Image 1 (cartoon, rainbow, N blue to C red):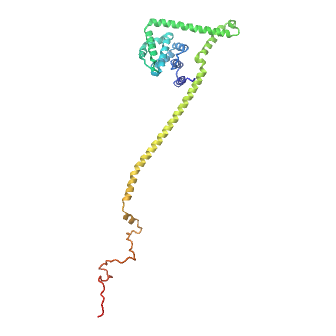
Image 2: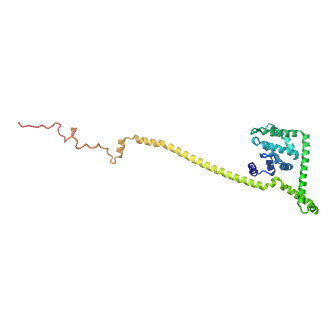
Length: 318
């Protein structure tokens, strides 16, 4: 089953250019539903003796302790790792924790409920235990001594079992190792190499690289998808703006067209007809019907051709 959270964490490690020490701390304090391995915490404890790595480790741990809510595992695992480093790492770890003990004390009020289960209780309890240990110097010294001895015995047991396995796998067995002056040193070198290769993170290095490549590919695909969506959004915004400008221009031209139409309708008909007469003469009335009975015509008195208005007199014979 593909670990999505692990892939996301690996991508962040690459993108943000985290150091080897910071990557180990992030892995030990991840949101995975299992605790940090003792092998990984032992490696981090050894790195605390390096000045540069110590600063990087503590910076990442304090950052994890500031998480909250659904990232409660970050906080709880950071406290577990911090307790391990106080007991088996550099003494500077305990010294810095004492200087910043308030950051640990505030976690006694940590609250988070998930699926009706109080997950914050684990953080609160671990915070109280760690504060109690830091305030008791005698207890801290005793537990640190006991933890260092246990770590040394564990390392010797691993080295012994590895040496026996390497001696048994050789053709000559023990005699083969003793036949050469530097046989013991070469055997120890082989054991150390074998132990380094047997570490969980080294054994799964190829798988980790594959997962990282898949995560990077997925990240690139998502980035391309985001760019495509942004281009579509910009195109849609441009189309919307163009449509709004067109509608605004159309609304500005509408009153002028209405005014022209109103002026055209309100102009007199006769005037229009006169203006359109090509001869520039007023249009006369239609001639009367020639077959219509005559009607009395008023003749101007000054008409020289006009006759008398009275009817002619008829004379009869005497």
